[in-house]
Structure formats: structure tokens, C-alpha cells
Image 1 (cartoon, one colour):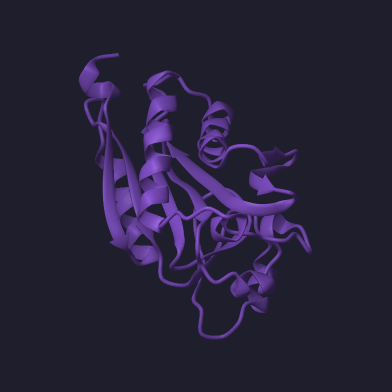
Image 2 (tube, rainbow, N blue to C red):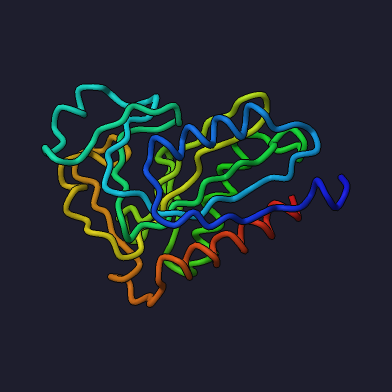
Length: 206
């Protein structure tokens, strides 16, 4: 792979509405070609619930009024995004890097585990990252023409109350946590930059 194609470009989008950001990811993926560098998008979303392809639509009836609910094309269940959560969208040409989806998901999880260190772990049968049984990072991707988009979301300092209306990972009663409650002093921006750097390293050495 050439140095140009191996490059990963990190883009900071700040606070970005969910639906328009997903539309931009689809557009990027549709028009990219073999010479397009991979990109990692760092951002926060205004409050929004999203229903993945694996989610029961009935779950949407339980969310509180005032927070939008959006059906989306990523894998996974229902989740919540809001300010204080770093979202890392991964526009990566898996085919060009000879990466299988399972391995790529492992790399997304591993970037969070490497960031948080001891105590952060995977949970069998439930994608994401957990600390003492509480979910701290969610992930879901979509693959089109061998290229991935969507990515992962790490709870840094967001209001966790909206999670009470949903079953994270489709598991009733699964608790959620955030890095602030674990003693980390990350800002969303700092956590995002660190995550992007770790994931870039994993991609470059895949």
C-alpha cells in the first residue's frame, strides 16, 4: 500500500446534527475511489436516540418526548448520543486494507481499551466496551462497497439520564458509565484526539 493510501486524515466537526452527518458519510462513501484517503471524523451530536438495523422498532415508543428518534443504517441496537460524548466516525476502506469486519470491530473496541487501560474490557456477545459490567462505549458500523462508515461513541462527560429509557445493547438493566465517573479528566476534544491517534496506529499496523 502506498504512503498516500495508507494515510488517515482526522477531521474535527465539533457539534454536528446526526442526520446531516450521516448523509455526509454516505456521500463520502459513495464518491470515494481507490485513491481516497481514509478519514476519522471527531464530533459530538445534539441529543438524539438512534435505532440501528438490529433494533426492535417498538423500543422507540419508550423514548421521552423532546429527544428526536432516528432510524439509521448502522448495525446494532438502540443508543443515545448527546453533548459530552465523543463520537468517532470511521470512513475506512476495509477492502484496501484487507481488513475483515470482525477484525475492524476488534480494532475499534481495542482503541477504547488502550485509551482507558486496566478494567476496560469486551463483553461476549455484546459489541462495545465495558468497565465493571457497565457500558462506556458503543459501536456500530455499516459497510458499503468494502468501505466502512459510522463507528464508535465514548461516554466522557454526558448526561446519562436519557439512557434510562432504553436497553443498551438490547439488554434490559445494563448500566452505563462515563470516563468522568471513573476518574479520568478527559475533555471530549482530548479524548477524541487520543482515540483517533490510537486507532490510526492500529490501522497503520494492521
